Amino acid sequence: MARAADERQQSLLQTVVAVVSALGIGAGGLLFGTALTVLAFLVLQFGAGIDLTTAHLLVLGLIFVQGVGCAGVALAYVRFRPRIAPAIRDLLGIDGPLVQFDIHASVPSFKDVAVVVVGYFLALAAAIGGSLLASQLAVDTGTNSAAEVGMENPEIILLLIPASLLLVGPGEELLFRGVVQGRIRTVFNPVVGILVPSVAFAGLHWFALSGGSTAGNLFVVSLLVLPALVFGVSYEYTDNIVVPSLIHGFYNATLFTGLYFSVVYADQTVQSALLAL
Image (tube, rainbow, N blue to C red; front, side, top):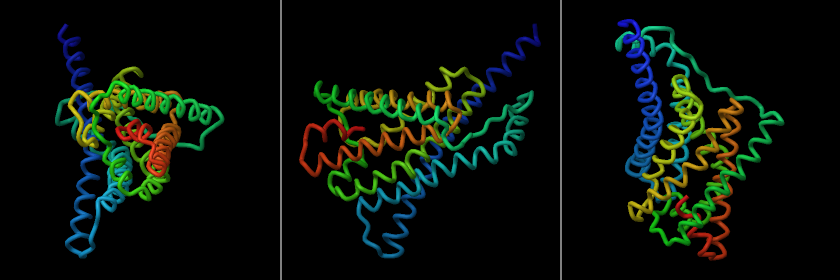
């Protein structure tokens, strides 16, 4: 009886540690990248005397948040966890072997390519359909900060399109699917392992929204869970981080392409549908 109770306590403790560490790494990667972005901005603006604009700040964010914060923290966590985790487990009194996980990446197979194509259209349909619904319902949603900068500087959108494929998709997927989902999957089944990172990923987009009502921004965040679920399912199914990275990258690139043409041709309907994404 006592042994069974001890095993349940150990299992609960391992679950709590897994969830806290996974979500902490996810949020920590973004915060670390944001701190580096602010530091770089201050150094360039006040140290080097370079007059920087919000567009420059966006570029710095792409480099330090997605490139260093997301990708760098994810890869560092996977590499150093086997060395650090035993000490933490001893401190918390967790018994048993350390459950290992890794981020698998390989050249996509034909099956992987098919998943990329299907996932891309599913994610895009979910996002645009939901955003158009918000527009039709006249929900007071906030504006995505990157899209807002792009509205004021259309040429920046042309930078955001390749950056989606080279930095945003790979960086955010390494962190949220590779690490957050991978870590949670060590203690939960696939459904929970996909759902928790997807909700966390969408929820963190709250901080990228400016303006809008609380209800409207909650509506936007709930919509973003849908493409996040597509990313998560594709990674679970293929076990290849390249697959969700490509889906995410092409998804973002398509949204920015649509925003660019809507700005150039002053299509207010498309603009309102894409600004919150």
